[in-house]
Length: 585
Ligand SMILES: Cc1ncc(C[n+]2csc(CCOP(=O)(O)OP(=O)(O)O)c2C)c(N)n1
Ligand SMILES: [Mg+2]
Image (tube, rainbow, N blue to C red; front, side, top):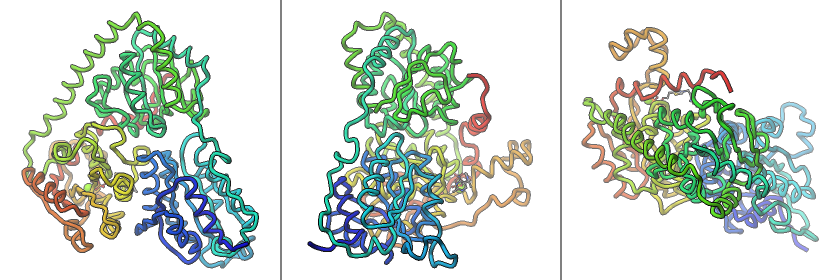
């Protein structure tokens, strides 16, 4: 008989789940946990803010398909983690957050005045998939299993397990302690689609005149990019994606309709008589699946596949509702489709795809005209454009910031699945810094770069020290317009549209708190041991970028962008429209 701490027990269970890395900041209140990680071969990566730890776990999970694990200590650590919990739940990333808590006898019930205590379990409950405290060592294995089961159930999101300090750090007899392997406490096979529904789906997809596929993050989480491409090619069906799932497919594939070509997306979505929707909720950035952005539901049938039954028919009426893992569904569908003769509508589908390809090229060329615009400082479109040329196709792009994200998205083309990160649902300024570092942890062999606004970078620039300390050579390109650009342009238009559009800006004293002082992000980077570069002209960007890559160290390029050109990012008016509730079904 030996002794074991609650923390060591949790560490062993994480190891048995295949966890290789945990993100979080240390504290005595859970020494038993983080002090045991090395013993079981798990790496601890420590950022400079708990919310970064949660974003890191989310980005790691999204890129690898594994569970992302993070920790935060009682009171202040848990409080700092809250923003990350909200965002990663919203984005739907598979994150397990383990926190410490003050010992049960003093917090149960709270007497008021307890040091570093708030009811973090209750606060996180509505923000997460599941939030509980393990208040005895005896129940710790069961509750940890439950947390791990919840982590793999339905739509991914954040699961929170809290372990009080006396349990996580205390010593307990390990007699009779049995730790069954994961397959004995949670489902370890994907949820298969009912055969009948797969057959019905295949029938409809063969019969339809112009079927299309709309892919959401569920395709990424089930790692079904290859199956998606094969099904689309077989059906000759165009593929649109949700914003968050842009990187499910190479955008130069003939079936891909890139998410940044808005008019073409609307056209495709209005031409289709059948939609195969995979792992998407048809949220606001999908224009809710409604007219005029989509054909009305009485002329457009829907086959919807999701692990979350509640998503089926939620925003768009559904005709074939399938609860299944996307990859399992697509594999079954492929087998069904291959066993049938090709669609009688193949020729007209092919003609339509060819026509879309012409429009795709035209729409891209129209956008690219912006690259020819002369500005004194760097034109923002130039930054993603140069990055695309310099980095390999499988490099990971992280987009963060207001207009900066729009520019990055508009001038980037996805060339490999699983190659983009952002907070597409939340637009959470600053989250990209942690995401980029976690991407490098998840995929050290791939290049990682982050295009980020100067406002956004200000939220978490201290993580540059994390990059240096952990040897994570990410390149940050900070687009410096010295303003909260996206908010500024909207504010100026609201205050005086005419002057804004004719002069490019309102006098500074007429806007409300939209301007920022200059931060020298290159010098800030150098002060923390990273490489710093500053670029003010288009032609200087590529050489600076190449120097950063050659240095093989974390690097920051302070890019002085033209503040007026930067404000007028493409499609801002369309995005405003998007936030209005469209009518119809
Ligand atoms: C955490 C957070 N706070 C506030 C906002 C609201 N907001 C949206 S865009 C924006 C301005 C962003 O400025 P910057 O990062 O410099 O990007 P730019 O628009 O200048 O490219 C703000 C404040 C937000 N999205 N996230
Ligand atoms: Mg800015």
